[in-house]
Length: 230
Image 1: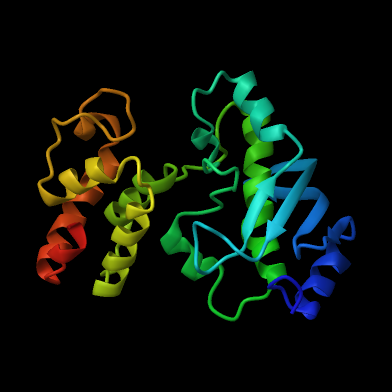
Image 2: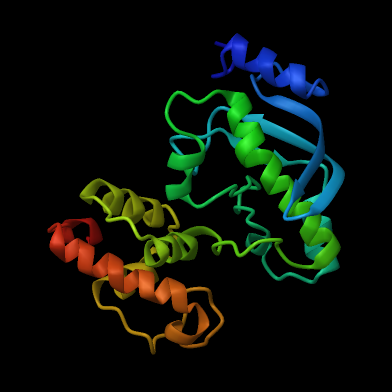
């Protein structure tokens, strides 16, 4: 193991992305050329990134950091008040997908190359498209906790008690806003201000997340998980 990555993982990724160098701290860092096409739109771009085995926001996936200044530049270009609009966490790591989707795109046992190809490159493609168009190229979930709630509103599959507990524990990591989310999950109200901070009613501002909140509330009752809201 090298910094949490196996030597095979590092070798596979560097064979495909040779400008990524292994640093003394175990991180992979360097340039990544993005050549990808989604829904008929081809993008050729170049990003400077860092990939670490440790991810403060996920127990499943490595962490991706865009370190070339593109994210901040895009935020300034479009006068974004919060870089979380670009799916960027407060610590600078990228939110490459909503947590529940990680299971599908990066199942247990997946290689580091799978992470790069299935999660990192699509994220960077989306960032490049945002730079050009001022919006994400696909109907994506919102960043962070709102995205988790939206996922639960959209999901057609039944959620297990473990899934619900994981969602709640992930939202708890958003320490600054946990009290707001806890109040909504305990007693959902469409008229309270949206957790995003817009000041608009939750039910009208992030309607899908509002629906997810109601569903999570019902599941907590069904599975007797009220202790998670303490």
